[in-house]
Length: 592
Image 1: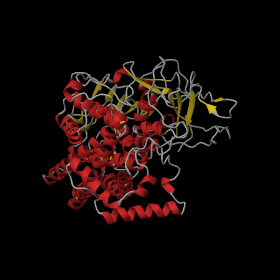
Image 2 (image 1 turned 180 degrees about the vertical axis):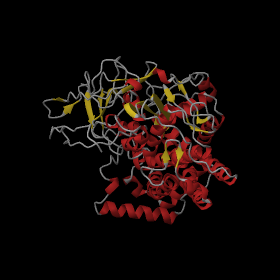
Image 3 (image 1 turned 90 degrees about the horizontal axis):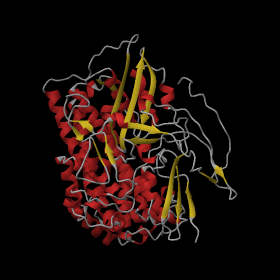
Image 4 (image 1 turned 135 degrees about the vertical axis):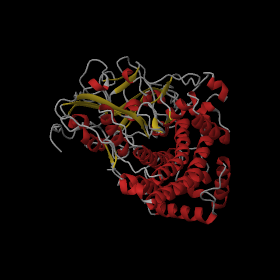
């Protein structure tokens, strides 16, 4: 039997525009894969010639999901360039804004972007509500908590709502799924739990967004972070505002611990056979005997580190998430991150360039070479040439994966006490081997572990802010000199976004930006082959995956969604066959 070429375009339930092409053999196993972003981002070009103090407000428009992260990284790059240290209150407030973003982003990802890769909505219609309540108590017990929802009548009401939608042909957000695919493994009762929490999470995520807005001013696109500190002076001086933040955090934490974590245990257990072929113990993995399951991919993990816990400077402070590199899933070794070893390659990207460049010297010059239009009427990627608008980042001439799982892996390898505790507790409660982490399921579990950790540590931070203000420290901004005539400097903001390592690099001359580059988490993960033909994280994670039905590539969607793709926003027009409808030239130098 000849190999078959699968095209999934667009990948839905993500931010932005992503295309995956995969080649499967006679056993329906993926033997080759290609990841392509079908959109162009020109923020870096737009920022040239701007005042660096304004960069954050423009850079945050890279994305409408993790806007506060791009905003803060851009501002930190400018602060690094001008050697500015922010006050303690500003550090804590920034941590709280980012922490709220993490909780919101991870919750929305699991339920509204990723859960339907595990949960068969239609199957939930045949569930027994009484047995569903019992099942909910079972998985909450695994997490060591009471269930968020365990009433038979409540599950019955949700089931009736969905049944009504189905009967009327109005599945809406649940429409066009691969319902009935044999690689769905949850029972009808487990599926009903997932559907119930999906709907309830729509309300909880709204409360999480309110947390960001209390100190950020609004959501999305917060406005309160500026070069030198923050502007939410009245909010941190008002005990009622801090109390409201804490109240919303408590409500959100309840859902995380009593719904989100039990659901991840449920999914992880039911899909455990896909997660690993090994039963390696924790001590064996610590000794470097790592092994990956379905979706494991590169097994090289990087974290820049983030969330400063003291005020000794941006790159000297102790951080909640350690900085480091782990190669080959070897938890016995971790190497420090050296920013000088970061580069971007464009060999297979639609840009001009003939060698990997460090971001300070990076270029964003489009060179679109089109698709390969064949006789079947479908446009395919020219995989031997350029095939993506995403560049290919490399660290120390190696491809790496970034994200929540990478942060947990680097934390354990660094012997970080807090992270190791949360990871080991999660695995112990679920009776799961550590090797389960190196898989699609593990990537999803890593995000859940991080969410629980973040919920708990944020409670410490909000109390720290209240105590610091009560002691009389009301400082929120550091004054600094800005020489607009003779200054020539550069700076970088390297930290973590919900989806992984994020860096903004800026060079400033005569008070204006002369070069700007942002290397985002989905650049690291979604990038195409590099100059040596090595795969990016998305591509590598698909190799060896068995597809039950080539016409319903659920397994491809599940693995790609485990990264939580966030491809920067853009506008384009296409039809389902890849037919060209129009060509438009935009002047990227125009003012905003």
